[in-house]
Image (tube, rainbow, N blue to C red):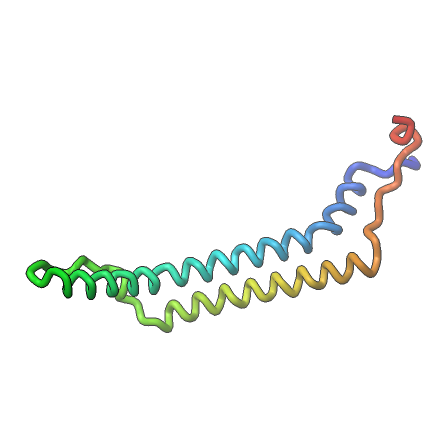
Length: 118
């Protein structure tokens, strides 16, 4: 049995690309968490500015409802900090994968004589 099995060839590719996929996933999740954490403070600030302009222009009406400002800023800061940590870890893993790929080329699975005739 001289030709490599399909599982072995697949495992070589998994070992080669798994850190890259994990780095991209960590950076994506970190950025998604940062944007998600900034969504409510930005919405609250936008509504406050709109209400300030609205109350100055039309004094007879009630301000626009603002349901986005009930949570203290420490909660949003902790969520954003977790996102920053995830993005930084993903960046470092990506840099490590890049440095490793420049140091040594990835091993390719050996082809059987039947595959090379093509």
